[in-house]
Length: 471
Image (cartoon, rainbow, N blue to C red):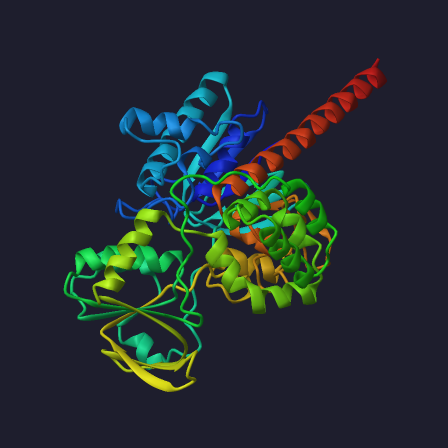
């Protein structure tokens, strides 16, 4: 069987590597849109202030190789420890090294594969499998296609006027700031999550005289990892079993609070981390309305607690706050207007008063955009229009089964079509960190290999019967 992986980020690298390691006689294609694939946005940074938010011993590209990153790093940074939060640049370099080793091993085994440095523009069904048309005019054929596209391009907030967008002073892509040559006197970031942290840590050094502001509805920074891992919660198994018996958000929260109250020596991070193996199950058992309730009332605190920052990053942010350079506002953005500088009308969360903030440069850093129905992505638009895929009802990526199989417009599993990474958020919720990515990549690869072996056996059986009939 022939397979095509579409997407050149870390999820695509994990999927390509898992399939590359399989002993299959077909051709494996990896469709990427960059000369050096594998890093994606998260690991392409060259700024060593941008740290991993997972300890070194928890990082890895492929399932079953969790010590490979640590070995790779120690060869280059001898004093690195397994509990360190290392620069993301190092993990990007590690991904590239892993891919090189995997491709070289595959060549020696005679595994057939190709990397296409061109975006995919169209995926269509044929009598058996799919036809994939690339931007450079090449056409591929495959029995199965795996979409590893990452988050879609961010859309401006509804509060942003056309005039503000046209001004050039409103930036939708936080990672493009290094290309700006003019230093802003006042820099404002909308959002107070992990992307804001990276944006402001870089900006504070690059533009040492800039006044820094961050605004979000709750004004809450990501919570902070402890310096060392916490001891596991001794009754985690019992708690997880009780949580899995719940079908509503409120009882789940009561169970977690009760566990922490009854075990005051247990750190809340240990309990939350111990839930990680069942996070997807808990999400899947919630009804549509309970998921809505979670997104409306709990999401903001979950994101802050679940996606924590390294202690070193937090210390630097606190220095900026304590020194008066960085101001955090808990407020709702009502309007962004002007042609540079920009004026933001915001409603303070505490007082409900409306006030004006001014900035020479405003950066939108409001997290992953997974609303595929509104995405400026020709491939997704074509596949949605043709009914091969359909959007998750809460606009959390694509409608899918827990194993990554995508659902078409007829609400049926589309044979041979899978997704990995943020496109699966509607079904898995937690699906963007490397531990979750590498696990589902491994599961999809195993599923496809079973199908390939079955197809090979059926083909051989048909050939045997045909030969017997000719005798």
